[in-house]
Length: 372
Image (cartoon, rainbow, N blue to C red; front, side):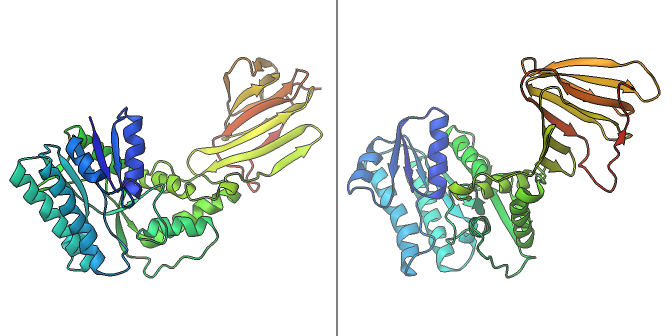
C-alpha cells in the first residue's frame, strides 16, 4: 500500500511514520511545506491512503490560518479528484474547531471540505478532532504547554503557571498513532461524524508542573514515579525525551569501605527499594535480621554463599549463589542472614527491599549467623 503523509516533518507526522515503518509499511510518500512543486500531484495519482496532518498553528499573520488549514486541504483534495483517486483521506483537526476564533474557524472549514469531498466522491473520510497532544518530538514554546514545561524544567528554565486549576484534556502521541493506524486498517473508533482517540487524560495544569518537577528531583532522591498511573507513565517518558544529550546520565551516592560498596538505585513508595551491593573476595556482609523488612538477593557477577539461621535456633541453612546461575534468594523475616564472597573477584548483588531504608526505623538487628 502506498501511503501519503502530509505534514511529514511535524510532531504527529514523525511519530506516525516511525510506527508505520515498525509495522512493516515501506511505501510511504512524504510531503511537507518544503517539498518540490509537482510532487503533491504525483503522490495523489498513486497513493492508496492519505494521512493529512499538515496544518498551521502559529502563523506570522492571521490570514495564514485559513491559507494553511483550509487552502492547502482544498489543494490536496483537488489533486486527488484530478487524479481520480479512490484513496481514503484521514485528517487531524482540533477540538478548537468548535470555537469561534481564527484557528478554530480555519480547522472547521477544513473539516467541511473533507466531509463534502467524501459525499462527492464516495471515498472514505476520517476526521479526528484532537485535544492537546503530548509526547516525544513535540516542539516546545510553540503550541503545547506540556512540551514547553518539559523542555524548560529539563533545562533549568522557568515556567509560568497562570492558573494551576485549569484542566487540560490530553491525548498521548502513541495512543494517537495507534488509532490512526487502526483507521488505516479499517478499524477507526467513531462517534457520530468524528473519529476519536482514547484515552483522554483530564489533568490540572498545576498537577502537570508538580509532576515534572518531581521527575527532575527524582534523580536526587531516587524516588521513581508511580508507573501504575497511565498518565504519569506517559508524562515521565515525555519528560525524559527533552533532556539534553549530555545530561542523560546522573551520579549515585556510593557508600564504600574496605569491604566493598553499597549504592541505592531506585526508591518507590509502593514497591520498595533497589540497591547494588559489591563485596570484595572473602568479605561477609549482613549478620542481621528484620521483623517486617524482607529482601531479595540476586548475584549477577562473582560467586558466594548466603547463610540463614532462625534467630531462636542453631541450624544454619546455606544457598550457593553465582552470576553464572541467575536465581533470586528471598530473605524472610525472623532469620538472621549473611552473604559471603567465596570467589576471587568482586561479587555484585542486586538487592531489593520491600520498604525504603528509614534511619529512624531501620528494622535491622545485629546477630551473627554463625555464633562464635
